[in-house]
Image: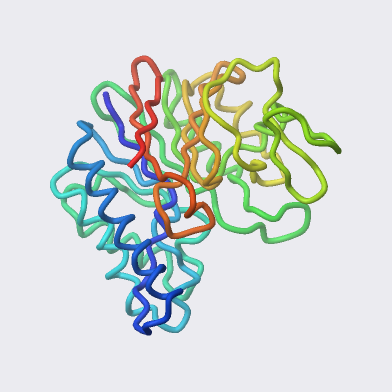
Length: 285
C-alpha cells in the first residue's frame, strides 16, 4: 500500500491590500496549492493523509466564515482519491470547532475520516489516526499530550495487529535520541542558547532542521503501543524530515508541504510511504 503524507499546509485566506507583504503572502498560498495538486495528480497512491495544520486557524479570528472555503481549497485537490484527516495544533485555533471542521471533512465522499481518533482497515493494513491535541491545559508542558483514553483505544483497536499510527505532534521519546550541547556541533541546529542534533550513533535517514517540539510530558504512548505498532508518522516540525527506528517502531517525520509558514524559504515536500517496506520517499515540489 502506498500512502501520500501531506503535513502542515497552513492554508490561509487571501489578503486584499496591494502591499508587497500581501502579494508575497498570496503568492505563497497559490504556489502551495499548485504544488500539492501536482503531487496528488502525479504520485500514485492508495490513500492521502493530511497530517494536521491543514488550515492556519489563527488567521481566521473574526473571519470564521472564510474557514470552510480555505479548508475546501485543500481537500478539493484530492478529487476522487481517498483521504484521511488528523488535527494539528493550529487547525481549530479560532472560533471554528473541531466538530464543525469534521462536518466539512465528512461532506467528501472520498474521505475515510471517522472522528478525531479512528481506525481504518484498508488493503490488509491497520491505520490508526489520533488527535495529538493543541496546547496543554495545565503546568509541565506547552504542547498537549495524547491522553490515557486515546492510548487505551489504540491498544484495543490494534490488539494482535501491527498497525501504523498517524498523528500531528511527535512522541516525547524523540528527545531520547537527541544530543543537546552548549556549543555548536556538526549537523546541530540552534534553539535559544542550546544546540541540538540526532545522536551520531543513530542509524537514520534525513535531517534534523530544528529542535523537535513534542509535549514535555510523556504519557507512555510509544511504550504502550510498541508491541502493536510498526510505524508512526508525524508532522508539526516543519524543518524536520527523517526516518529512524526506535523501540522497534519506525518513526517517519514529515517536513512542511507549504510556503505559508516559518519554513517558507525551504523547498516544500511530501512523502510517499510504502507500508510493506516502511520506506518513505521524500518528494520535493
